View 1 (spheres, chains in turn purple, red):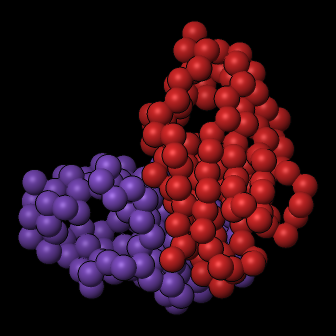
View 2 (spheres, each protein chain N blue to C red):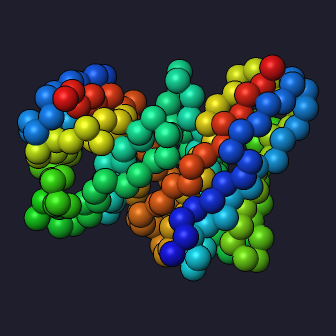
Amino acid sequence: KAGVTQTPRYLIKTRGQQVTLSCSPISGHRSVSWYQQTPGQGLQFLFEYFSETQRNKGNFPGRFSGRQFSNSRSEMNVSTLELGDSALYLCASSSRGVSPDTQYFGPGTRLTVL
Amino acid sequence: AQTVTQSQPEMSVQEAETVTLSCTYDTSENNYYLFWYKQPPSRQMILVIRQEAYKQQNATENRFSVNFQKAAKSFSLKISDSQLGDTAMYFCAFVIQGAQKLVFGQGTRLTINP
């Protein structure tokens, strides 16, 4: 089975712009979660989608949003980018609809905001 | 609050040695999974081992094993016969029932020296 894929792998944006990141889960996995990784804050949970519905949300401002499509692929969007949004954004998928469950990660998207 | 503490920011051992990484966590939930993930320089987050909290037997995966002490909320990782490829950042994490959200520790940077 192919693993979790994320595109693009690298992005450079300027302050004020918006960005969309994409994640394709492992085939058959219906839950997709997003995490932000920074040197200062570590790994923080953004949100989780299951069957096109956001089920859980972390403590991030409304500039961070996401969605999930019927094929379980997910996108996250960050609007009005700030310098502090520079981070590695990781997507993870899991097979069951019920937690606790094991999450498998993609390679991440490295976002740099200038 | 749900937290994970990894008290060893960095560790370094010689190839073929055994090393133990420490992790303590805090949750009032009874049903949860615990994980160790490794993140090599490539930044891909890789699952090392999983422990279901309801299982008393410690999980093992080849050279990797855990010491799970539920009452003490302790979850250490032992790597036997360490290899150069084990060099990575290691994260301890858990997910509770009803919330597909991984809570991560700050990580331990492990270096295996030739």
